[in-house]
Length: 260
Image 1 (cartoon, rainbow, N blue to C red):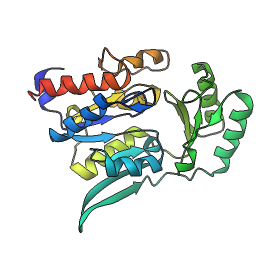
Image 2: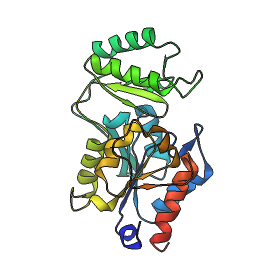
Image 3: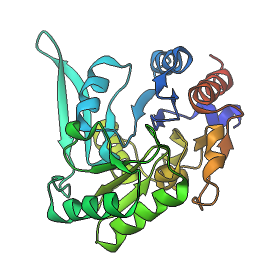
């Protein structure tokens, strides 16, 4: 990334799991990077498959300007309010509650056909999607099993994406990218096309591919290379380090090239 490109960046978006976390923990280096980006005046927005319940906390307590959750089903952010800050929520109009009969059928099939698969333990905090855990907790299943779960969901008429830990399944025509574009435009006046190079996105896995394909300055942490067979649109830039350390590397490079 050139200094000129870095100087034009206004928004830094990032996945959470295995992008800013390392083995499930938010490292000091990654969290410090979020603060440094925020204090530089950049708009910082996590874009994640994690549930609404997590997003409520993140929007309130992290140095971010919003958080997109459940793979684009919702976005939460804070605004100044009387006596403090007020939490705002927007739910995609196409989002379907996760008690839908198709999702229940997919869960039954996937658990029956893929030994060792289980419902993610954060499912209780979700509103719209079904998260099936193949790698967050033991036993860690191979990627071909995650692909099998994805294929079951697609066969049943749902949408599905493989992350580094879960297969996320939902009904409704939305994804991380469509919600990110809506939020940046509606909240900050971002303009598609003209503003594409104002956005840096950092990610690590196949469910980030729409973001990699959309934004020319997309970045991957080093563990993106694990999924080369599953991703057609790879990020232009890649860190030399994995997970949270890789995100810290990306943030430091961006700030250095901005002269910070």
